[in-house]
Image 1 (cartoon, one colour):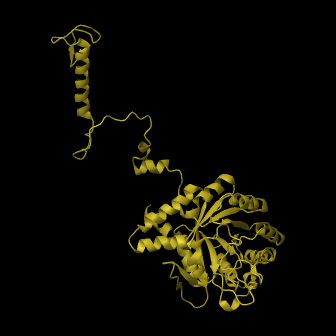
Image 2: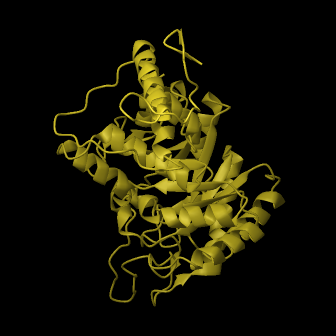
Image 3: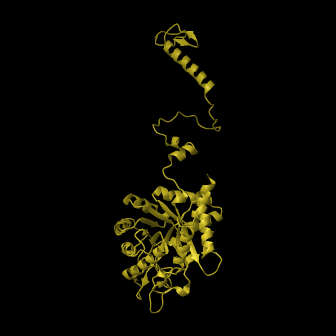
Length: 396
């Protein structure tokens, strides 16, 4: 055997002893190890120094080290299980026609009620330039047009219908979603018609929701989105659309919409909160009689099964971050696309914390959106749509 370029006088396997009585095998192994270390030191990169005081330990005997797959941004990107792009985002837009100026919404910094017409078109054009090509329209109805039965909801020349037409005329390939509910048009502030004893009338409300959906489809809507939570409304709307020849119009059902405290800023934006009762009428102070209880999980499965059977094309969970378990549950129990609404209260919290320097806004907002995708959402309705798309474009 060759050691250091010279012929060994005794093989490694020889069991003789050396000059100091050490087994020859041990001597030869030690020499081999020293030679290997010298060779390695001449060709290997030096190990980075550890801070003084770092303990010297033997490597753990671990068959698996998950951190190996997190070692670099390139590797992390290659292994990432979910991705986020502007194509996943639906941008809500608030529209008014009280003046020619946009109106800032105090409880939603950076978000405005857009003045109907050019301002809406300019805002959507900017979003499209960054890859956001889906919007959902929320009109602010003037108080004098609101009634207890909300007929303005299906006015063919209403603000929502005119906004749909103008957007589709300007951007034919824009995906336009609409909101189906009576609260923006209801003087009582509820998603349905309120009976004098405070009961929200289900089937009568559904009739008007169907008329609203048809009027929006006629204006050019690509997808109508019933957010009212009335029983049976998805099937009734599907039949109404098909009957009028709108078989191509999709339905995105607010399947699991919870009676949440996170909607406050949205109701500020549209002045659509429930109103106070009167001497001869009871007006429920909240929407708990038709929206889901925040403590319920299994109930979502009942809503999932109903909306699938009635013809929904997309199902939604609202709000978002506090209900990621429901998003995952919906993903695991349906083959339909899943949407989630990153609602106004969630947006306002991030904004408030960022303004105080408590959070990095970009990192926190993008993490939130990524979490929705990880939980199983295909589509995300978020007030961060424009800004998130800009952040993503800047990183390319």
